[in-house]
Image (tube, rainbow, N blue to C red; front, side, top):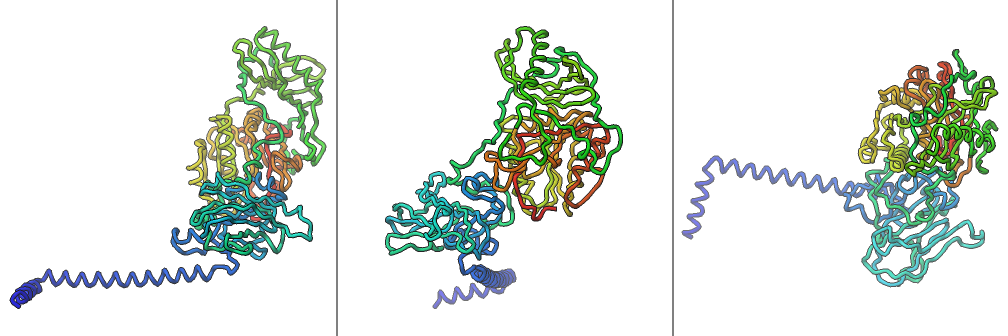
Length: 619
């Protein structure tokens, strides 16, 4: 009792102190606030979970945006379902060579059971992937139904180790048979995660895709439900950013199907002789084509009445590429050899025992009916002193009625001039990223330090452009962002203003292109400052075509891809107008350029391919 008395007395003395009373009050207030916040947080968490459950489709498909749980919580119970459109893929070879596959899907969804029906999506091209986690050990069978599909299963989490277990071509099955295929028996271990990847083309309007399994304890095949499913990538933060996602694993189904080559063989890379090294081989002569104009033209007059096509050797033929007009002509082999050997004689006369002709690479002829023929001669030479191969690429002129060659004065091309590829876009994130990666590949192949990129973007909501540019390997780039409605004339005009050096080349390009590395030097060869601009005829690929397997046409009427010196753009006044609708601006630009005395080089290029794409959302 005495001890209790002493404790009580001590507490009474403490309580009489003001600081103790304040401390107790603050402690009680703090505890009350913590309790209230915890109660609200619990309520909010429960409401979000209810929202996620309510939004889940009864069929198992769920938009990733509707998942409201924490990242760790929602990274289970579903597979990644990625969809593509406008590929015209009739088989997996076509799908695998589509530039948006597999790292730039048009849509990303979460699938909570391995069945897809027509009321869920109208997309025909799809990829379902992630991990399966069986709860029992033993032999499993897998079945895929209704689609042309290939299924790979990895015995580890690494997608690179996945092996093909099913390959089904649904189109080969007669109508009265079930289009399905069953795998061999596969031994799986309970609790292990296995990477699974299904790449499919599903043409059925009702039944799209089904993946089923037969477990060791089941009597038949069953749909795999969410209990056993885990995603490979977290799509919850990128559902509306249709960019190249490097975190998406590549597909083993495409490993042997992907073709990085193009139909037209690319020339081997070698150093060019400078004009200074061969300037004494031929005399110089005046070059003023009679077809150049010195007056103002308008109303599409330039492309309608003043096109002077070039003859080329070798001629790029392709049986699956048709011409919109039979305006493009081949240069005969005899004429090609005659002009090359004429130059060779002059070379051997000035540089005896220095060079040996190895191969005729390319010869182009442009004819002026009144004054003569201009040629671009490109040949491989063996330098007998250094024992190395070099490329000679020079413009020469042969006056009408003569057999002598001369260098056209002021008509030499610059081997090292800066080239700026200029692209503009609004909400074309996937294709903009494709363009950036295309330029990365060109620089990797050529080590061209004088190649630049300029991008003008209308605040696209489907790409984080700053991050993409920061993360890529490009160093020579500029970009500008602006809000508002897309205008091709305005955006290119503003983008070109970012190029400060008037003695550099600007090339206006589309985004839906495959550009091969030799195109950059082709631009340099066909842009002569103050004299000539380059308007190549490119390949317009049909839907489902790709650069290795061409079907389509030569785009004779298209002038959207154009290269010219910045000084010539400024002198001509650019587009000379502003418009927000599609069509005609390229032809108007040609009127502008021809009006200031520039000629334009019009010929097929085997280095630029335009992919088919939907025009939905453009302009």
